[in-house]
Length: 462
Image (cartoon, rainbow, N blue to C red; front, side, top):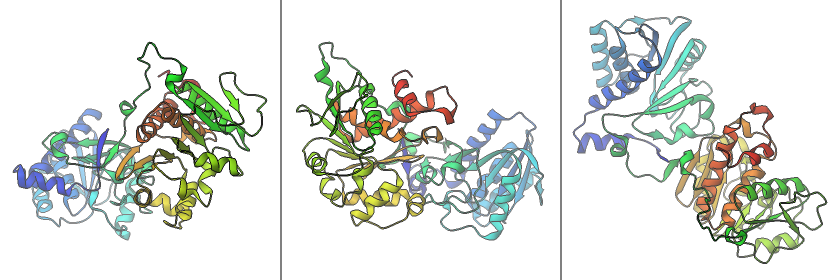
């Protein structure tokens, strides 16, 4: 996993104060990293437009122009005059070398670089910058944002006008804002540019991380004397829409649970032979998954909620008025945004619309985990947020391939299966989420045609 930061100004200060690396040195290395990317991906002579702002991001743009000039057909669109000392210095150096300025950009370039505002954005764009961003988006060419796209604010919210990057080359370390739900359509691929020292030395301590496929702790079976009881017994509670429970149960079995029982008030006539069924909770249950397709909540459900067993709670169960009583240790909740908003209201944390949540997901995740620090939250979305206490993990591997009914039931089954096998709740949530997204991404089928059963069938094949 990679570290995520709210801001990197404090990391830069360590370089200045402890390592003797000036802002100018860091800036040269930042631009060198971007220049290296362009040299790797575009032939000499390619046309490069750099839109330049007034501050340090603009200064990065001037340095980049100087480094590319001569090998590439560089044009600088100076949107704002230099304001900072470094911006003035880099501006003078670029002009002394003969870097050309333009007043009006053409309609086509091979590369379009946004060096307007960077990561210091904390307010809406003024009308002039809005017009520039709109113009840049209309220009044909590969679009690169330096540090952060113009229009993406440091809290992860986006302006109505935002640079649509194909790739964001962020400086020094990953910023949390790049992985907000709102940012996902605008940032493109994200790469980190080193600032003259290795990232491991530049980056400090953090409690936020970006997950990678290699972070999944798969339930490999290394005990040659194991039997089915070794790998736990998952009970999946079925309700009105029994298909949801069946999907979760099949996913749980595929994820390695030794036994999986679908618990229902009534017998289910058609159930895969690999699944067991019962009208009561099996005595040796090691984890319970409930909520998927549940519908009405009765005393039987409430009694299961009260049991001192590891539990995954999803969907309908998150709407009950007394839910706060059951949000205890060894509990994982997996809401989608509407369910999370209902949960926030029921627990008296906040009363908000889904649009408000989606614009600032991390804020409300923080509020929830402050109130319920022992619970593991898996907030579903294009970028899944997994949180417990002060720890934050973002799975940015999700895609529209998973935008189909039943995908969430599969996720619930994967996580609950690991919980049944004895995983710590946070580890079950992380590994189950990674398996969910990476499996969906690995299936060779058009995204619109992917079904939840395709995901179940593909688990373990990659």
